[in-house]
Structures are given as C-alpha cells and as structure tokens.
Picture 1 (cartoon, rainbow, N blue to C red):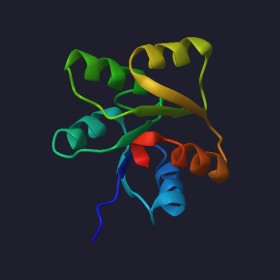
Picture 2 (picture 1 turned 135 degrees about the horizontal axis):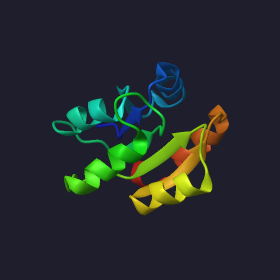
Picture 3 (picture 1 turned 30 degrees about the vertical axis):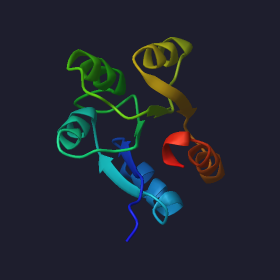
Length: 123
C-alpha cells in the first residue's frame, strides 16, 4: 500500500474537516484537531505534510499556535491559514509567524482542490 501524504485540519468546526475528507480523502490522509492545543498534542507523536489552520478557535487561537510553535522551536510542516475573519494585520502576523498562505472562508471545494493540487508539499 502506498503512503499517502498527510493533511492536518485544525478547526473547531468539524464540518471543515468533513469537507476536506470528502474532497481529498481518496488521495490524502486527513487528520483533525479541534483547536491549537490538540494540534500540539498530535504533532508530538505524528508527522504531517501540511497543516490547514483556523485562526479563531477555543483554547488556543491559530496565531497563538504559531507563536507557541516558534517559542518551542517545533518544526512544523507548511501551515495554511483558513479563516472567515482575516484582516490584513492578522494575515501579515500569520505570515510573519510562518504560515505560507491564507485562504478565506467560505471557500469552494474547487478552490481548495486547486489550491492543494498546486502545493509542492503534497505533490
């Protein structure tokens, strides 16, 4: 069996995870964390090829996750921010903290498929 590239969805809305599974689950292994703290727990023992990170979540916001990863010198795969609340200031801060891109919610299935299929980390 061939090893699938792994995507971690970090979002308090499980529907986003379900959407990624439906869109990409045949080609990629899709994991889920409902907040930044859970993502940290997962990343302690499992490796992913890319992370899609929401910014507004309970327990640990996406920006806090990126700050903590930098402080703890956690080696992260590329991080793509997905959020319905993105100001230029938040976007710039996320990029400064290591995110590689930002995708606005709501997004279409086609938009995500095109985006993922053009990421060198997953192809």
